[in-house]
Length: 110
Image (cartoon, rainbow, N blue to C red; front, side, top):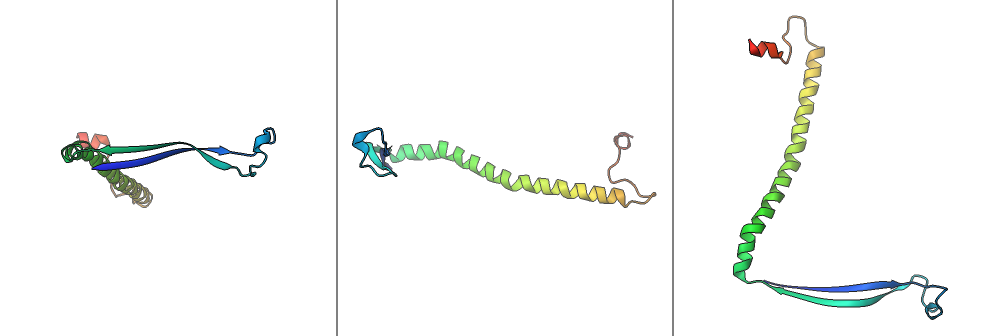
């Protein structure tokens, strides 16, 4: 695998009334390139496979866990909200003979 990247650093030059040699510069200014760098990299197929099996796998697992959280989180919140609304509705509309929706702790211990 080969990779190539170019980097250029620019400086914005603006008009300044204090500097006589910049009086011909427009009010908006211009960008002056200062440094240019070329980077190249090479990795063998063996090392690429090793990276994919170790680091690439970990990145894939973390991305999948994030997506699962995005799906499961709102689902659990919605389910809890529905149960809350149902319990409030049932509590307000229950008759005297009906059992409550949730039993007390003492009921479970007996």
